[in-house]
Image (cartoon, rainbow, N blue to C red; front, side):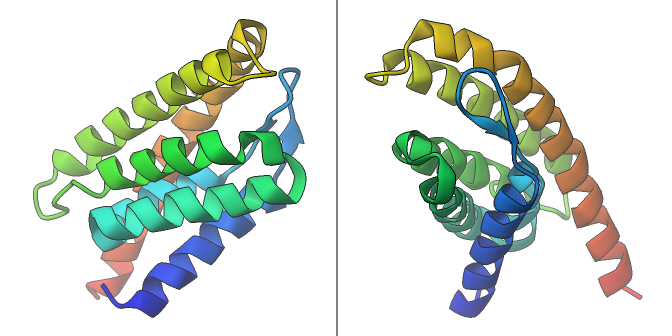
Length: 155
């Protein structure tokens, strides 16, 4: 994948994360960045998913929630990497790998918040329902975006 496409995907993740930012009780926020992270992995492969997911999301956190940026860099990078392991020509993989990716995102934020100084178990528990909703939205939206793109690009 060309570097400028990865940069574009990274910026798209950052914009999708910042554009819809709904604060939640634990101190984080609901966003639509996961839609673009899943799409980035499916579209560009594991490297694009890793870079766009990790860097794009961490940059968005630096704008308003910098305490989460280190956790986000790792968790969202892993989410994009795992989604990007799918081979789009093998239909079941475009559903399987993103599912694993969003499960890792949920678990990663739970553990990250629980173990991170100044956050703790209370924040991890408070953020869990929102992270689950965000993961489901990212899974459905990212796959739908990928399917729409492949349909449009094949005509």
